[in-house]
Image (cartoon, one colour):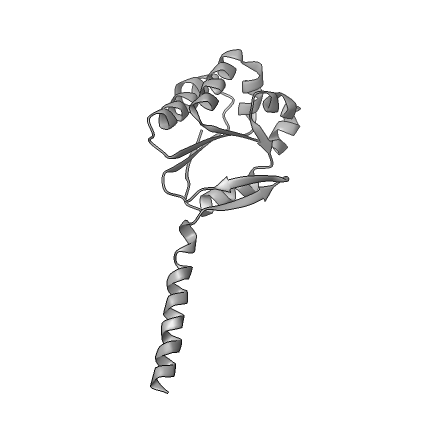
Length: 152
């Protein structure tokens, strides 16, 4: 009987130890028929760009995103274009050039489809090489997985 109880207790402790590790594994979500990878949280940066202010874009968003990736400050860097920032981006050729440099450096580019549709710019953002998807669930999942979120 004592051996049986020891066996059950050992199995329980093993299961508990496995369940504690699940929060750091890679995961993915399916969003608008697009599979979006959710790497483990360590050193992951999402820059949530919502401002329609050009100076914010030039002096903060693009500069930080580029240097964060180029200098390996974070393992993964994503830029999420959300709201007025998308409108600004499709109207400004200098920002489009800076966006190309981000993409070339390896920054992952996303835009909120709901926001882009409100401005009528989803196709224009896609042409710029941005993944235009519904991003609410992605943002929530990244936060749950411990991503660093910088909102500008």
